Image (cartoon, rainbow, N blue to C red; front, side, top):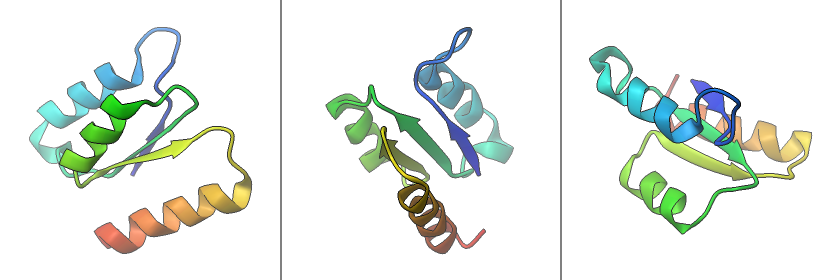
Length: 77
């Protein structure tokens, strides 16, 4: 499981996801995108990729743990 943000200083989340998905050994790795900048495009991308999950900032510890548990349950990590 990879947890990332969309906005990072040297590589944005979309570029990171693209790099990860190009590698066969990681193309089914669950990715949680934590961001306050997510929009309809990212939501659409998450709908097409069953291993991509969005969590919108701000979020609390309980909400974050709930999302992680959902990913684990969905993907049987």
